[in-house]
Image (cartoon, rainbow, N blue to C red):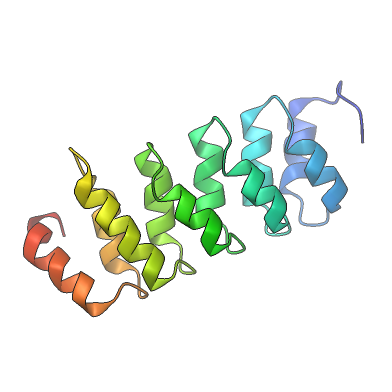
Length: 146
């Protein structure tokens, strides 16, 4: 690729395309436009090492897509449960691949916040991987949010 003069919309299309080679996705993950980086983070063919890198992006929407990605590792998800942005934590809570351990850790983190987010609590509660004991705790402590 190497063409930095390519219009953003062309780069966005490439980042979204499931046929884009991984080496091009790697280049696009470095793009100045966060929308392009977010599209790379959402692309199902983005490899784990690149998701790991994008999980530290300065823009929350990029991290949001990493948190919801089917291929994000438990290690990546574990770092994102502490994210300052509720959208990112919400995406971890919604991710059907988040393990019960990750979900319980996210719940513990959320409970420790000065202002927990009811959208995160609801998404946690609805995730099929959340253990029954944690669901009961949510019902007891935060039933009005459900």
